[in-house]
Image (cartoon, rainbow, N blue to C red; front, side, top):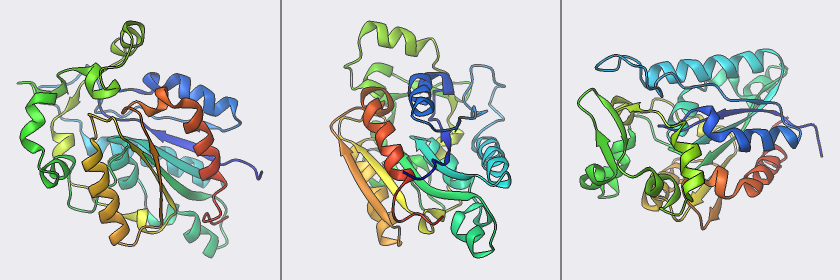
Amino acid sequence: MSSLPTIVFVHGAWHQPANYQTFLDALTARGFSVHAPRLPSCSNTYTTPPTISTAQDVAAVNAIIKERVDAGEEVLLIMHSYGGLVGTDALTNDLLRPTRAAQQQPGGVTHLLYQCAYMLEPDTSVRDVSRAAGMFELWPQFVNNFDDGTTFPVDANLSFFSGEASADVMKQAEALFVRTPLSAFDTPAKGDLWKKLPVTYVHTLKDYAVPQPFQTIMVERAEKAGADLARKTYDTTHSVFITEETAMVQLAVEAANDKRNVH
């Protein structure tokens, strides 16, 4: 096995890095150097209405990717859920490994790993995908839009664990959950640099947060647009980083050593 890249992990809405700690620790134990920035919009401390949203999230992730690439490190970008929108938009062409290799520069992002994440075309938002799937009218059944401009799932166990989480798992998770501004879900994507890097997409069949129809629409659109994409499918919930932790760590190793990657 070649030396492993640095991982930059981008978490999803209503979460913070601590929700993923066991997964991040497992990646570290496998030999990865892992960086998981906190997205500023995901917080229980906010103005009314919230003034921090996707743009600030993108800037935070771009800063850590740039820091690692400028240090000459190769980077595997792993994104979960809403983190797919953020991580993709945080990329610029000069941060990609193929670009830097052509310029005889070290470092760069080598591979994109989306865990049931939003892989959007430019000018498309999260809620646009729900419209395309014919499920937009179901939003109020699953997500509370609060008067202060923030959101949170109606039933977190259903959204994140398909209703299958134990009381202990939910107690641990609920202590860490945060709100996310509604504006984050209506912010259109800007970037599509998934066209220029190898992609692995994780489908989760029992997902109520990013339902399978959403995932299929996004992946098929990306493939049609020219993405070099490999699909992996798991009969599990949105919290695949918990329910399939061992498999997700192994998939990270496989993505790091994917023959499609430029070194």
